[in-house]
Length: 96
Image (tube, rainbow, N blue to C red; front, side, top):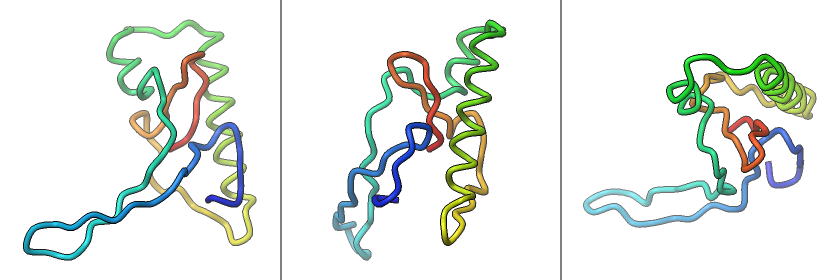
């Protein structure tokens, strides 16, 4: 994921390793910060999204998923849901 870049897929900045008491190391992904949180949080705040925003978000998510599916080897997300769609400061969607 560090090699391929797509404006509709959340960027992986790095991986860090931290110790866990009485256990193995824990790996954590470092991703870019998304100012407006998740689509799930937005849907909880607003009962209904305006149609232009709904269409734009659906289109951006579809472009992100298409990018992942066209990779070689193919990357399958397998957990697409509103909490995994993150929104930047301009309410543009990125699949996380």
